[in-house]
Amino acid sequence: MSALWKTLFCCVAALSWLLPTLLPPVCQSQAAQPQAQPPAKYWVYLGTYTRGASKGIYRSELDMATGKLAEPVLVAETSNPSFLDIHPARPWLYAVGELYGAGGKGGAVSAFTIDRTGNLKLLNQQSSGGAGPCHVSVDRTGRYVLVANYGSGSVACLPIKPDGSLGEATSVIRHVGSSVNPKRQQGPHAHSIYVDGANRFAFAPDLGCDKVFIYRFDAQEGKLTANDPPHAELHPGAGPRHFAFHPNGRLAYVVNELDSTVTVFAYNAERGILKAIQTIGTLPEGFSGDNTTADIHVHPSGDFLYASNRGHDSIAIFAIDPESGKLSRTGHQSTGGRTPRNFGLDPIGVYLLAANQDSHNVVVFRIDRSNGALRPTGVEIKLGAPVCVKFCRPLQ
Image (cartoon, one colour):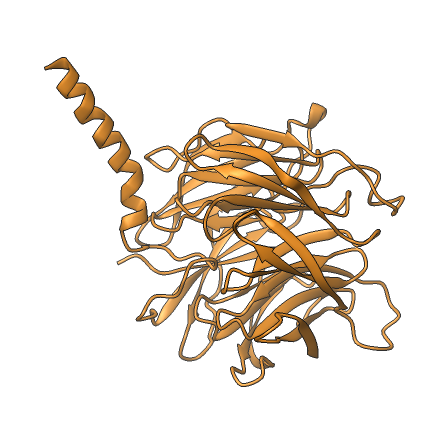
């Protein structure tokens, strides 16, 4: 009898993890695939820097028919939630706390539950395994949170418990290396981390090393181990920052912060290998001012790519060649503010929301599906230092 109960217990435990992958998503992050019947409105969660007027994470609401964006309301008071991600199947939100502390121990990742009004309730907080965490993502199974620590140049994996809270890190890896920029590349600076569509490999662009580190990801044990090859090289002084896969799973794109370029990679999903096939600038001809890039997203159709310029204060618009995946720059759109650190495309690709950190506003653009151009809607909201945009399907 004891053996039977032990077997039943193991089955129930396994089922508790399997259910999130079988249930339809109640909350939909930007990375999730669009559903057949999109909602009339999306909740929009906004991460901020809290060194000024902002106090934490805010929620707005985007009307999909009109593009109207509701005034933001504070839903969680927390320090410097500069990047967010949402569980693919459960009403849980995860946020970094971009902090720097002695010994590289200052960073945190917080877990929140989302209630039916869109408000957040803190579940718990765990160390991010390093200093200055700047990016967080949830793996495809919804069992782990991955985090990149800019200050300490490290990446970590934290397990998600059955109630949505976070356990202590199961894997922490510190990058090693440097590059040619004496101010920004004296050591490693992990800037983001993403899993591929098959949930087998994780990719971590490191601004300080001019590399995209590649890890084999064990979704059973929550372990990251170096792939073979262990990284993809960028050109010296590139400063890779954020990363995006094409919907076809055979292409990937990296936005390079320090020299304002985008690098296109062919992706071998069997071996986790990235092969650079093109690098193209994000700035218009003749621009001579200071600029750094920040964020990058591929349109859900796979036809267009967008990257943000801080300095030129624009979104660079690219057409994606359907055969090669290479980019051609088709234009630029002012973000209607200063320093667009992050932006978001709604899950079905109708609107782009630009978060302007230094002018304290979020601006709405309608996407022209024929050519990818961004059309100003005249809609914007005011918010102190907005730096991350995430979409969520309202709970029923």
